[in-house]
Every structure is written in C-alpha cells, then in structure tokens.
Image (tube, rainbow, N blue to C red):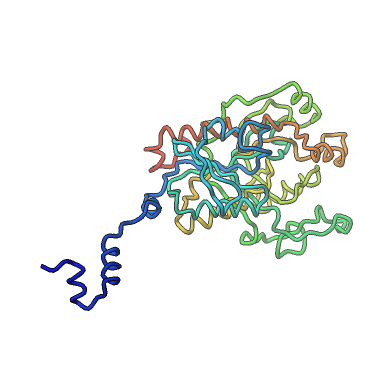
Length: 365
C-alpha cells in the first residue's frame, strides 16, 4: 500500500494539502474547549446581597460580608457582565453581590441567571438585605419574611408644594389622575408575590431565632411610645415590602407606603419594611422563570430592620433624616447579623436536606 501522503498525492492533493488533512483528522479539542463541554455547576442556593462597604471580608461589613465569612464562600468566580465577582462554597451555595439600586440589581441577577456555567433550575434564591421598618409592625433588628414586593417607583408625582388640599399624597398611580383612584390597574403596578407556602415554611423554621439586642437599641426604641411592636425586642415575622429608588423618610411617606401597599393588593397587604432593589431583582427572576432558567416558586425575600422609616414622636423629620444621612442606622450591625443568622437557617436546611428539597419545595405544615 502507498503511504497516506502518497495516496493523497496520487488522488490529486498537494503535499501541503495532505498535511492539513492529516492535522484535521488528528485534531483533538483543547483543554479550554473541554472545559466548555463540562456540565454546568449545580447550585442549591443563591444568596443575594445588595451592598458591601469595602472588601468582601475583614473590614466593616455590608450586607455581603457575614455571608462570605460564615458560609465560607471562598471560591471566586468572575462575572464580567454583573456588578461583582461571584463567590461559592463546596455545599453549592452561591453568593451574588448585586449592587445598590434597582437597575444594578436587575442587571446582575439577569447576568447570573443567563450564565451557562450554572445549573439554576432547582436553586433556591434568598434575597437578604436591610431596610427601614414601620414601627407599627416591627422593632429595630427584627427580620421580615416578605410575601409581596410592591414597586413604589411606578407612579406620577406632583411636587409637595403643589399637592391639592384634598389629596393625601402627591403620588398618583400610573394611568390615574388622583391618588388611589379606582379601579386599580394591576398591570401597571409592579407587584411580585413570593410562594406563600415556602415563605410560611421559612417563618416557621426561623421564628424562634434569637436576635441581637443592646441597651442602645432599647433606649432608641423607648422613643416610640404608643407603638407596641416598636418597643419589643427584635423578632422574626412576615409581611409586605414597598420598594423605591428614592430613599424616602417620615410619617407622611410611611402613610403613603401603607396605603400604596393596600391599594395594589385589594387591602390584603400589610406594609412592614422598605428597600430599594427587590422589585428589580424579582422582575429579573420573573423573566428568567419564563425562560426556564430558574424556578420562581423557590424565591425568598428577607429584609431586616436597620432603622425606622419615620421620625420618632416629638422629633422633626429633618432631624431624623439628618442622622440617617450620616449613616447612623440605629440597628445597622444588628440588622446585618439578623439577615445572615435568620437566612442561614433556611440555607442550612436546604443544603442538608438537598435530596428532598431538590424535588419538593418545602411548605409550612
């Protein structure tokens, strides 16, 4: 028999063409291509935090640091399309620092959700952050499992100096001409409801969690005479959230938030806590659920109370805001700790019982 090259020459191929053909037949995928062919990383829980003050570890903490340190999220995974690198531990817990504000959070969650490196089809999502609390319902350092996230940004607004005398607020629902005009149009609302059975399960699992208190918190709470829940030590509860990209503050704005929540829920919602990003995060997760990338029924939202959303009786709103603007959240460290301590009980349960949790979403008995 003729050698391969001679056979190819005899078939009309030049020596150079024969060599190229031989290289093609002998080609094997490179290590990079083999890596691309690896199955995606199975994720059991995604923990979403919104801000960090400095480094991920070892300095003054933001919402992310306690999770990184206590969950040992030591593997760093670059995510150029998002706000921050991802972090993961061997248990299948993935940490996402989404960024402050609705836009960053929505974009970062979408970037992770579409990342082909990860299998998120059975992953539980825990959005865990701090926020302002309504003293009618919660105390400083308390934790609220959220049933509904209601977007407070989708509105018309009139300047406070021009609000008609018979209006209770300058915020008007989109498509309406007066505050809280009926009938309510849910299509323009931006209301995201979590799985009530899963949220009830999370509350039942964590209700007895011991939360940090202090003498300073007791003194601050004592200013809210006439608000029984505000005077209580920190506790775990369940309620609804109003989000807004504008950091609002004061009793009048609190009245608006309560009415806004009731308006967009046919009177069913009880506003307890406020935050910025969760409407954007849940909007992204809604779209990812439509695309089959995530299961929205596995989403939990936890907000812990770092400050009250209004002034204490006898104090002006301006003075109250001045303290907040300086970063003096009354229960900043207690709220950060509560978010991790309460949330981690859920994360640990999912990881430990993964064989069951992967196929069956838990619900309250």
